[in-house]
Length: 278
Image: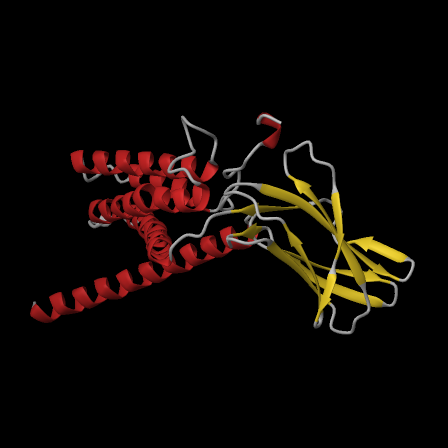
């Protein structure tokens, strides 16, 4: 009997390890998708002009206290270029400046903006009489304040743990495991601390406001955090009342997954200069 119990425990531990591995892989996949599809990730591409080919990476977010550097690699010195820009959502006229050569790069600078201020810009490249814009549509860059590492890192870790435990809880609910309530509690705790405590602190450092979601604004990051928390709080309550109501945990897990894969910073904070006094 002792050997049977020992063998049964080993099977449970092994199965539990597999379930955690599955949850981790799903979470990493969702995190990667969110990262590469977000509106703040650099815009990359390749253009052919004249006798040369140019690969570029155009930044779409900037957190420094100075002007934002826009740099194009041109180690062979084949091109010249200019930068055209204006404030996003404004009545500004387009400003144009020539890119300067620094080493193997063509470099220009976008004027610093207050947190949540945006600039739309084009990079135009010339070779002789030929010219081409690197993008068909203007690239939009958002400026933000500097977020201390001691605030940003805990926020990132806690939100990752919230997603990991959410996914693991959903799997546990499907398997009708007896750890569903415990895992749901931990998910709610990570979501509370990472999303509703550290999240607003990060938001305030970056954009000067603790909360810009409902009812104060339309920031999608804030709103989706609030929605996820409400679903998980309800799931924990229902499981506390009846541990067999695992379907609520599964639903909350699916909701958080759908919310999580929405690109980060979509419909984020921004300054609308057209609504401000001229």
